[in-house]
Image (cartoon, rainbow, N blue to C red):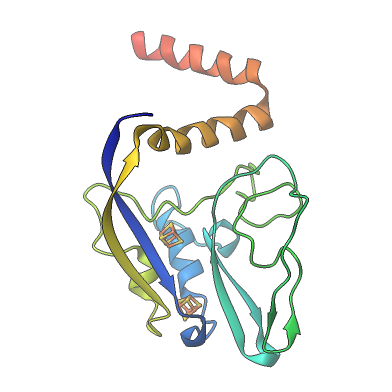
Length: 182
Ligand code: SF4
Ligand code: SF4
């Protein structure tokens, strides 16, 4: 068993009934993460996407979750208000079977980072702009095993290795290390 340590658990509650499909959350998320910040906006780069069926007035905001290198074998089907949605519609993963939650230019996975920044924001950007109050933010403290804090780093590295190959990543690290020394 690893050491326990305190971790702040950040939660965004999604009230689907309140979402009106304005997509302000998509716009602000992509602008906040643009380089330089706020220089552009493009919902395809957003880490939240609003899945919608305008005819039935159903809008479901979905947050980008973990990267996965393979399509999953078991899938979920949702029926909301009598409408059956695609098997993958509400999945949070950045996965090879679809374009959702991938950086359009590089293809690298997008994952909601809760707008981590220094100094920290009071609430994540998507929550701040959601005037319908469909998104609300909560924080709590929990004890977690130390290994968990490694997970994000390993997931990011795994996706880079899948995309560029181990050799290329190692060569890049070496070059960066040399540049730092010099
Ligand atoms: S900003 Fe709020 S109301 Fe608008 S689409 Fe996003 S979650 Fe829905
Ligand atoms: S919390 Fe931040 S990173 Fe996550 S979807 Fe909202 S705006 Fe994007």
